[in-house]
Image (cartoon, rainbow over all chains, first blue to last red; front, side):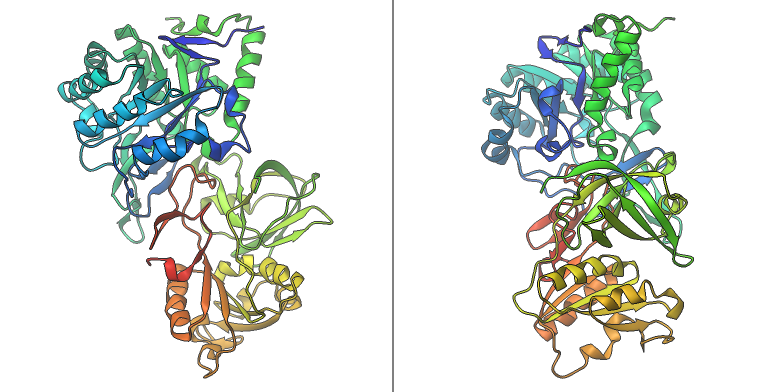
Amino acid sequence: MVNLEINFNGLKLKNPILTASGTFGYGYEFEDFVNLNNLGGFIVKGTTRHHREGNPYPRMAETPSGMLNAVGLQNKGVEYFCKNIYPKIKDYKTNVIVNVSGSIINDYVETAEMINELDNIPAIELNISCPNVKEGGMAFGTSCSSAAQVVKEVRKVYKKHLIVKLSPNVTDIVSIAKSVEAEGADSLSLVNTFLGMAIDIKTRKPKLSTITGGLSGPAIKPIAVRMVWQVSKAVQIPVCGLGGIMNYEDVIEFMLAGASCVQIGTANFINPDITMKIIHDLKVFCNQNNIKDINEIIGAMNC
Amino acid sequence: MKKFISDFEVLYNLRLNNQYFLLKLFNEEPLPPILPAQFVQVKIEDSPETFLRRPISIHDVNYEKNTISLLIRIAGKGTAKLSEIKAGEKLNLVYPLGNSFNLPLEDSILLVGGGCGVAPMLYTAKYFMQFGFNPTLLLGYRDKNSILRKERFEKYGNVFYTTDDGSYGEKGTVLEHSIFNSELFPYKNIYACGPTVMLKNLTYKAKLLNVTLEVSLENLMACGIGACLCCVQNTTEGHKCVCVDGPVLKANEIIW
């Protein structure tokens, strides 16, 4: 029997497979395809202090081995979440994690404070890296001082496991990671989407209503693996890797680079049952390769 | 409604003209109940450039033979790749997705399809017939040679045609058909699928005629199950996901 359990800095994961915010709704959308209780955890849609209508259509453009999105954190706000959505998802036997987004520091703090009161939410993922909100969002995650500041303020009110999701749209992701660690983050997740754009050559119009958007999918995977490798070497807290994971091979690759667990994102759109297949395939791989404990492979790249 | 993910066997891939092809797909498991205007998400294998699934409306269903038919327009790289699939090959579907056209209160139905928007109207007409209704169809094409599955459609209702060049039926778009000019427009309920500009103009027409109109939309989407929030349509009640709140929306709630 292979051990797939991960102790993610105090957060117990059944296995290293989580799902990425914004690609998995609130979990229940996938109930026909996935036994949610078998996941290491799932991270629900970005939640903000107030209701957000999101960006105008079109919000999506397919690109080679990837897609651009500009959803813009459409959600009904944290109060609606606590009252109407939390009761529906609180009893899953897995880690239900809320992605907390915002545009001003006070909004992050108030949202985190409210989520802190929910017994069955063991962690939040602080989204300082959304490229699709005009104000705030990614702006917080692209300088060391602002990233540190938002984490510092949230840390004061949020008592449970605090994951900070980093933006790849920076010159030096390692220095951002270190400044976030210094303010008390329990773990990091990386990477969010890469800022990109696409143009319709016939109409000469941008394919997204916001012109630019976030690129995800296999197209970004090698860059994400590189960033996970750089960051995990440089910090003491564990890293959750994401960016274009489509199968168990990609999971192993991220873990060898230094990720303690991973998130499956865009792949959920193509195969809604992909997480179950990946967990199964991971077990088979470990058995075939005489890996008794998946923790053995974390950061185990030979070089 | 429970959704499924499953491999279907391609029974045949029939090229109808230079733009359209018809796939007949078989599943060993009995089909779940399928409603008019529902769609499937088709996975296109070995095409990394078009790696998202393609949402395709359900053209016909045969519960006795466990088959679904898809009438598909070659619109881009994904559907071009899909058009090459051969009998005997497998096609992975997520199905059935979305809401449906609502049954009307009285038998006074006009189904309007423009271009590839005719695709869901065959099963819609068949479905309505099963409930004792006698739908009339108004189908718009570019020219006589573009007309799709004429005999099949005519099995399920009285069919009017328009063609852009007047080579069959009345000349012009469906909106210009004389049916809309008659002083006593005989229908109370219109159901439509087609290009956005057609649906938008039909919305104004339905308002003037004081009849109900339901439209089936085909916004770009990624997941098809309400997770990604990419396919939103702006409505009087805010953004609605075309994949789960649609594809059918009441025309009078849409902000075009």
